[in-house]
Length: 198
Image 1 (tube, one colour):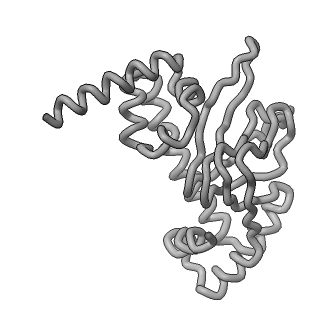
Image 2: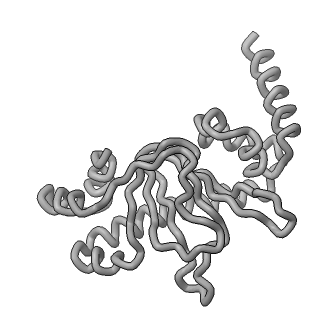
Image 3: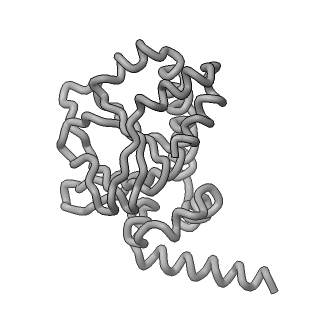
């Protein structure tokens, strides 16, 4: 599993092979069972994650008591938590493993120490987050302007495997529609696809 991290280090840093392996030896990789809650809404985050295998759901309960899905993190995505700047550092959402997961786990309180020891690790992390954030910005802008059907089409194009990995009611919540609407749109798209194939 750490081979994936090695690929990132090779692509995003000029670390020697010896330095790369020294970092890999220090970075904790942990396995979590499906259903494990990594962070509860209202808790102060102490860790950040990078997904090597599995799917992590980001969700929150709104004032009406609805469980709203705001993101899914899958392989090669960082689960970064940007609330240290807030006076109230409590998380506005929960993180739950939707599948058995293998995650790189970073302790936020020892992050500076790790970066001081391995300066290029900070550069690599920043570049990974910038890539991820840029993608999120693009997706969010497109999401706001799109119809529910277009949102699903975009998701099918950008993350085709996600649809079969997550429960449909959570996927519908993420796309901003009801499960019934999602089911109707999926059936219509399947029918159109079948007609085009003839």
